[in-house]
Image (cartoon, rainbow, N blue to C red):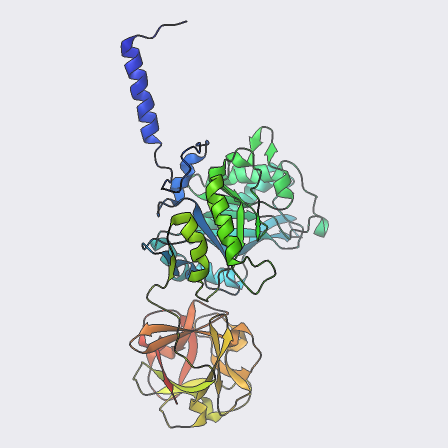
Length: 475
């Protein structure tokens, strides 16, 4: 046996101390299991260490129907944000039958969120919340598990990396559902494809987050030629809501897995009761898992629902609100005038008191006409419909469900679509904004902030101008 001198021993001990000290950035608080060991990926928790919480809380938001900024309205009682990560659900992996290649696709709602990143993404990031983009199959035969070559996987990884860099995102989430492998003459899953994809993406995005929603053929092809998916991704979690089951991902330890899968939408079949969520929280804490996963946040304040789990995980209640609290005093079924802050007197008016579909809405001096009186009715989920008394079967509507700035607001036969559902939010000083459910980043807006009779009423990206402020006067 080689002997170690006293000097050498001192040097060795000092080196060990330095190594330990330099790796102390892992999230830890009073809820961290002290016996939990660090894997090779332990340092990756520093990517989402803004709030010093363990486990991390992650929320998927269906942006087709909901506003991702709701994630930022939930905090712990001490002021820290509840959610560490918000995931935009979802972009798609599509298939081009002409080129026979997979490509990244954004629908209109995802496009709206990404192209208006300063409205939707940056406000969350400014609060310390990481914002990721989930990628989902789209029934076209293209998926993460059937790239025919390493080059094909690398090409798609480049598209993902370009999206992250273009829109200032914090990472990519993989969800291998709805690919419909074999459609359009595509290949069946193979062993190498997903490994090639995550390897290429990790090389392109070494400091970003990569997560895996553990489902589909990709979940059965987690290693190839000695390379594991677990050595490339940061996190993986259970995809089956209202169940508790940790994914088996070689190369990934418990600190980077989520066993709990909680669906917060009571209108869905996989809704997770508050008591079940609380039970999952206790099990997560006991088992040392590093992620607590939620899905399908809407506009309704459900802080009391979250509090059961957060009391177990973090020892604190959840509170809601960021200075723009949804209206609480409105009387459903009552009649109101909507007075514009542009001059404090002009109101929302149906052009020429028209009653036909497509009649434009405008700004006009208050005159007591029924075309200026609106019945406001709660339609659930934190949304309201507004119906003019002169045409009670019509509703305030965004033309053709458009989402672009300047889209005309009109009246149209009441049909229950998201273009007729409005979120009414307090701005203080008795003023409110009205945001359509299909375009949650836009508000009811007076064109150019003009107070002239006949000024067009439209939707426009949310801002703090008087053109988007309305006083609701109950009649």
